Image 1 (cartoon, rainbow, N blue to C red):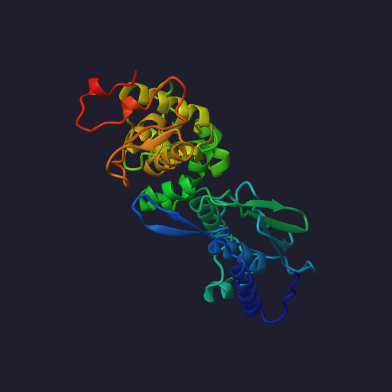
Image 2 (image 1 turned 120 degrees about the horizontal axis):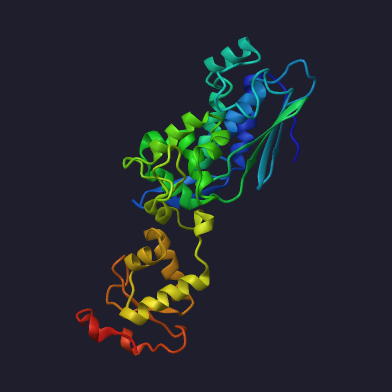
Amino acid sequence: MVERLDGPLILVFQRAMELVRARLEITPVTLPTGQQISIENFPELVVREALSNAVFHRDLHVDAPVTIEHSADSMIISSPGPLVAGVTTDNILIHPPKPRNHALARAARTLGLAEELGRGVVRMYREMVRSGKQVPSIQDEFDHVRVVLTGAAPNAQIARYVRQLPENEQQDVDAMLVLVKLCAVPRVNASQMSRLLQRTEEETETILRRLSTSDVDMIEPTRETARRARPQYRLTQSAIRALGAAAVYHRATLGTVDTKVAAHLKEYGTITNKTVQNLLDVDMLGARRILTDLVRRGVLIKISEQQRGPGVEYGPGDKFPTGVTRTGAVGKRSRTKGEHRLP
């Protein structure tokens, strides 16, 4: 469907947002506290900022329209003209606000439709990571600027983890960018992160040290480099547990899960949600998903009287690895450790 919008700018802007809202898809995400949040495939705040920049900071000397291409997988907002002189894709997060059309920018801010160029981009980056999404792609050409948003399903583990951080870090774009980077690679240093944050190495090191304090507990220096002026940083163990498979290099394979669970059952006869958390470095929700899958595949069965909650005990099921019987695992919780070992 193609719709062309004409008329007063404020009405056209509102109509464009109505069309976007009508096609937004919602993913419910449950936090460890039990609270449920709703994540849009294209966060409305991000779309609003991208459209505001496209409309109110466009080059009026270029005779071309602002366009929005909206599909289930991506949204592309294209604005006539290049970025404002002095602003580039390498400094857009830190460059002082610099509108192209001062009168239009003032009117947009008065109406609550836009912020200064740069501030809105920071919000776009921050909100995409908070929603478990990839950061926006901003492409600056000689005759247009394109903002590309990815609409794939959100990474719920990242979205959950962000909500566990202190409020000031949740609102900090630098913290969000460090987080998303360390979900992709096992370690970083100030030199590697400075370009992504668009800051000097000294500023970047200060940010990394802040995120490694006990109040935040997101990252830590590696043991081998901890004494250096600019050490390598990695996610803390608590962060890895909460992020689970979102840290792609830490993702446990199906075979690894089965092997570790089988080894524990051979030794102790039963397993619980808490034990899975410790074995596989996942949080409570991640352990629940693993246990549910193992029960579904017949590797485990519930053996305790309690059938719901973190205290449920599991033993070997019909599809448990060959050579291990179920008899030793089914018993009362009052048995001693020596009595419930498997053959």
